[in-house]
Image (cartoon, rainbow, N blue to C red; front, top):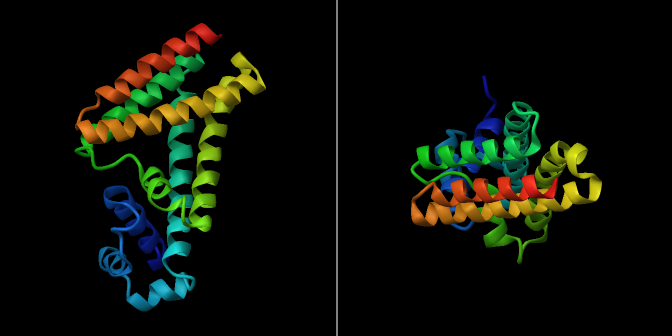
Length: 187
């Protein structure tokens, strides 16, 4: 059983992913969550930015868990990373190219003008990078694993944007293939 607070955060995550930061209004969040408007202000007295920062944190936790689970299924780091990206391509395609980027949406729309949300996006991206770096570290060492993890996140985020724009999973499948080649040659 979820709490009203959790319902509000979950609705916010979904709306950010589907329509972005600026298009997501508090009234719509209240409507989608089924929570009374007073609950929103009770749980998030600092308003939309506080709520969105919390939603980014939640989305980041879910992403890290998904990445960890996918990476753990393979011993070989190149295979693990490419397998994850292929799974992500399927997820984005199955959603009708509507899902796959709540953090990206907020980063693109608000990070340059809103310090709180910039920091929230930065922190999520750092955790995502650390998750990939942890998998890569034994094969590539600390410094190279960190650099490769940054490249992987950048390629995935760009791949998601292209997949959604083109309404095709091919950009993400191309990212998976090229990241795989890079990781095999870098080892």
